[in-house]
Length: 87
Length: 259
Image 1 (cartoon, rainbow over the protein chains, first blue to last red):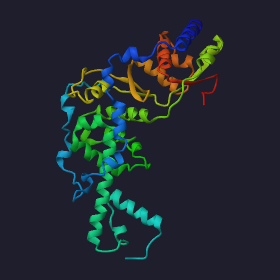
Image 2 (image 1 turned 135 degrees about the vertical axis):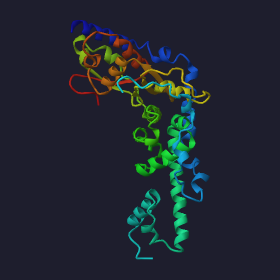
Image 3 (image 1 turned 180 degrees about the horizontal axis):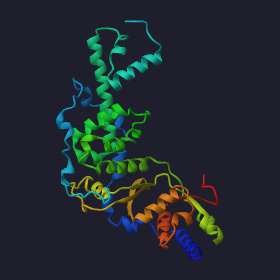
Image 4 (image 1 turned 135 degrees about the horizontal axis):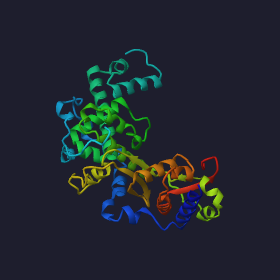
């Protein structure tokens, strides 16, 4: 417990100094952030922006077979992702 | 046309018609040609479902891109029917969409999809969470050594942790605008910490014990409990990072977690 207490003391000292931060560690590549926040702000009026032609189609959308087949970029993952161990 | 029911029950019938497609009950109370009235109900229904799907697409852009438009719209429609928005704010619609996807039979070949959705919802919530100032570090510095192991922290309202058995962060990054959807990695169990700083989403990949540490702090465990038993490790760096990112918002000592 004593060594743990020391560790906690130095951990707190580090936290108080607060010189760390993730920016240098995990977000070195600023490009990764894109403008996510800005894009989100632009979508915040979704309630009005999507008052759309889609909603005014003549018929209820019947569920068609093709709507059950994923056709997006998931194909880029192919079968390459391996199931996690223990699954 | 039968006797008009009270407004509240008429509204409830209307809601059943547009949400669940049960037109007949409300049609009995609508004036004019029933077929015209039925078509008009359909307009409401489709406009509402399209709005819900639009709100989901705004919250889950990566899932939408992964599965494509037709698949996403149909999943959104079924989800909207099963779980209509509980609140008027459509930004809140979609909290249980990841759980819906994990049980959606047509997504069974994409077992990672629900976790990608969880990550997107975490980011979405993080961006909408309340602001809160960091704690008083001078006061923290005055806590004597004996009291330090019993410190508990309240973490920033925008902090979210998503733990997945899949490389969800790699998938998420690969499907941001400007990327072609091919992830940098194909393996990995990603523990992703997300938070908001200066109005922007930030995120970092954590090691499993770092994630467990943050999880424990978020549950209100003491610093000593969160550090865990067994082999001492450098949780100080993690605590320092949390502090540096402004994610430690209050502390308390002893039995109770900070308010």
